[in-house]
Image (cartoon, rainbow, N blue to C red):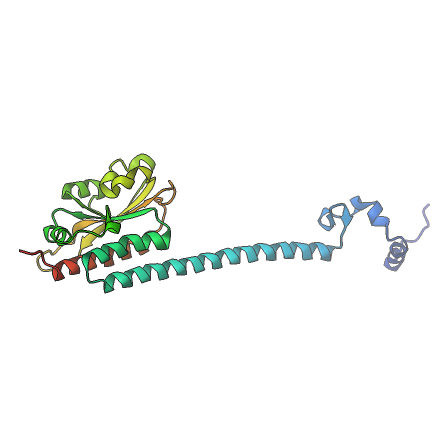
Amino acid sequence: MNTSSPLEESQVLAWLQQHPDFFANYPELLPAAIQASGKVLSLEAGQLNYLRRQNDQLRDKLDAILDRLLRNEEIYRAFHAIQTQLIMATEPWPLIAIATQEQENLFNIKRVTVSISARETAMAAMFRQSPPPQSMDERLFVLEHTQLLQTLGTGTAPLIRVGLEGKNRSLYFGQMAPIIRSEALVPLYAPEDDANPQPRLIGSLNLGGEAPNRFLPSDATDLLQDLAAVFSLCLVRTTYTHPPLS
């Protein structure tokens, strides 16, 4: 018959204190949660390491969110700056320069151009009255209205084309068309007035990227559409203030 009395907790503790290498020699007696890299850790140390990893992951996520917010703020300010310049412009060709060259510089776009409908005879005549500056070569294209409709349709959302989808790119980018691999064609609509109770398509703002993923169908285009709306108003206003010579 076994007559040995059970050990008290204090006895077990005292024995372990006298033999501190016991669990190091028999780590299989400990739960896996308090083992790491072959070294025995206390449960508190394991929990602390876990919380530190969680904290690092949360910090990385927060940094990524802040980076996106800062980038979005920069983009918004850049769009606002262009819109302000468009509103302040009073001459036709400077207006085109702001809409095209400023976007290229601020957003690192390979080529930006403008197309207007041949149906907008007063607008087309306004630009023909004075030759474009050399820097504005192939920045403005006058297209048949049917060509614009075939490409853009009747919607207001930008047309995003990638790769070989843009088979008629030369109409919108001229000699630069062969190096364009993705594009965003943003319809330009004149506002309604008494003579035109419905918005009418007057052209497009054309953004071309050299990389296939520069413009993608999943891209947000709200700010770009807002810019196109302001640009359309400025085009119409400038046409009224610069009537063609008789």
